[in-house]
Image (cartoon, rainbow, N blue to C red; front, top):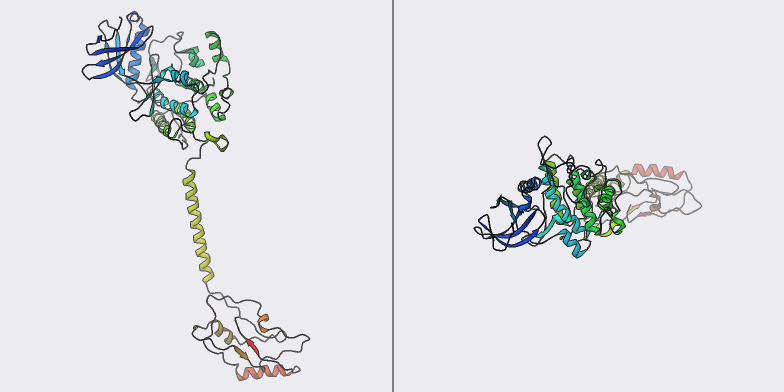
Length: 477
C-alpha cells in the first residue's frame, strides 16, 4: 500500500515522513500517539507479502534485534501486522548517517576512528555470535553512526534480515537455500560465495576486514569489472595490500587486515575477541571499554580460551592519536602494559636492598676489630713502646684535658750507628690504627719501670754510644 504523511498505522502510529524505500519494504518516521514519541517503523510492501523468503527474513531480523541487548544494535520495541496483514516492527529512530555516506563525504577515515567504529560494531557482533547469530551482510551501509546523549559517537549495527540463526545442536533456523546469493558480494567471504548455509562467525570477520580496508583507503581489496570476475577474484585471488594505497599505515595494520582476508580459516581470526585485541592497539583510550566487553562476551560464551592481552590505550576521542605499537611507528605506537608501575616497584625494591646493604655494612664496620699494636723505635733498634702505654693512649676515655706530649728518655732508646740519620719515629709506624672516636689522653703515661730500663740500658751498652736526643711523640698515632 502507498504511505502518505499523516496516515495512521496500527491505530497508534501517525506517519510523519518516509525515511527510505526499497523493492521489498519501506521505513517511515512516525509519532507514537500514546507515548508522544517519534519512532521508526519498518514494514513490507504489499507485493512482497507473497514472498515467503521475504517474510522469513523480516521475522528473523525482528527476533535477532530483540535478542541482542547491546546498545550498538537498533532497539526493537514492538512488532505486529498492519490492516493489510503486512508485518511491521517498531524501532528506535536513529539520527546520523551510515559509514558509507560518511566515507563518500569525507574520504578515507583516520586509523583511530576506524578502529573505534569497528570495536563498537564488534560489541554487537560478539553478542550476536554468542547467541548463535551470524549477520552475513556486514558493510559500511549497515553501520550507522549516531550520537549518545553526551555527544559521543555510537555505532549501530543494522539489518539482521539475512542473518543466520543456529539453534542448540547446530540446527540452522531459516529457509536460506544453499544456491541463494544473499548479501553484498564485495563483502562476502569465499565460503559465503560457495554456500550461504555453511558459514559461521568467521564470515563476519572477513566482512569486517573488507570494511576496515575500505574505510582506510576508500577502495576494495578485490577489483573486478563484473560480478562473476569479482566472485572468482575473492575465491582464488590475493587481496591488494592496504599499504599500497596508504603506505603511511603501520605494518601491523596490514598484517591485521591480511589475517581477516585469508582464505585459510585456520589462520583467520577465529573470534571477534581476537580481532579486537589487535584493533585496540590503534584505537583511542575510550575504545578499550569496547574491547574488554567483547572479551567478556566471548569468554562467557566459551569462544575465548586464553586471556586477551589488552595494551594500554591513549587518547581521549575518536580523532585522537592512536597508541604506538613500537618506537618506530611514531604516532601509531603503544607502550607495554604496566610498564610504569613495574619500573616503580623494581626501583622501590632496589632502594630497599641498597638500604639494607648499607645498614649491614655500617654494622660490620662498627664491630670492634683486634687492635694492631704499633711498634715505635728507630730504624736500627726497632724497640717497641711498652704495650701498656700504647693501649692507654688508644683507650683513654676522657677528652677533658690534653696532656703534654710523651717524652721517652734517651737512655730507653739509643739508636745503632748508621751512615744516615735515623728517620722520625712517626715514619716507623707503617700500619695506621683506625679508631671510631678521636684519640685523647686522660693522663701522662708513666715512664718504663726500673727493671725494664735497666735491661734496655744493658742491651744498648753493647753498641758504641752516641749522643741521642729525646724522641717526642706528638700529634696522632
